[in-house]
Image (cartoon, rainbow, N blue to C red; front, side):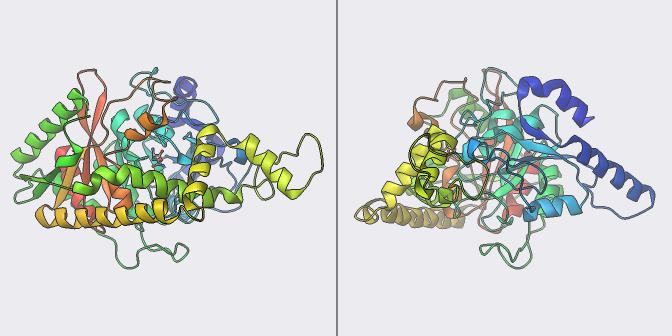
Length: 454
Ligand code: GLN
């Protein structure tokens, strides 16, 4: 049914870069047989899933939305993909994204725009617009995204889906094509909070192949969602982050946010205001740290090892000239912009002024979170300042595009988990997201609150 739905609507939505029909059907049939044979299966066995194209999948093309990887078929699976396959979830295909996950609209994909199913003239968010649009358009019930600065939560918000960025280290990064290694985290995109809990528990947990993976037991997310669904939040302290609300947020977004707060109050939660004074510098710090790490991570795309190789049109074919020609032709403008920014920020003489300062801001933001979590069990804000904008609206203005991430970026800088749940429609008829943040390794708290709101 989902493959039929993809065939029917993906011409318009363009959520998928690759559809894995044959293998998905074979997996579904195999799971059916095991079920008939009475085998005990994972609760999500047989439930199809779409995977963002920045996650490597053995035997399936993986492009990260870039021409530089076109034609590359990874020889191995990411840990999270191994887990998905082992549990018997058919993989429907790979979803569109901003090139190397750099963007907030999916307009930076080398393979065309993904359209927001709510209004085909509008962006589906980014960088994981494909995963969110696939779920919103009923092409897939579940999807995987990655979130370095908001790329799961913001697409979730603007498509009316649930998007979760787990605690940093909660889901293995082995097999994610790295953008900014200290910020990247994979997580679920679904239609309900309980679906996200099931998927998050499946893909999460310790992995020796990721040096930043958290050892030990992960929190019980499904239990927390089930508990939250009872609708009793008595005694829970919900902190409204003063700096992530009010000015700069679209009126309809603020109205839906206020309504969600009323709902929480009605369920017994205590609403308090908290201040995180350094969040104001989060965007600036992020756009130094992220390009710095990306400039290093993307050095491996050299025309020798993966995908595209372009030889210089004239003159000698030296290694350096092949690299230059390949990178010149293979990377898009946004990727080049960030490689240049990052290389500059890391260069001798500027390191302390830029990268070093940004790292200090990062510590201050972590302290802001620690202080705020003394006063509240969870923190909340609108997920994004606006609803889905029109194609082209922010494409020529990188700063305007970057500003869409103000509310999501602090969580990545501090490594804390964040979730966006649908909060109804703005007066423009488009979905609004409600963001819930919890302390590191306390992802269960946001599932409780998210499920209560549903
Ligand atoms: N929009 C942000 C950026 O462009 C976040 C991207 C992401 O989370 N991958 O960097």
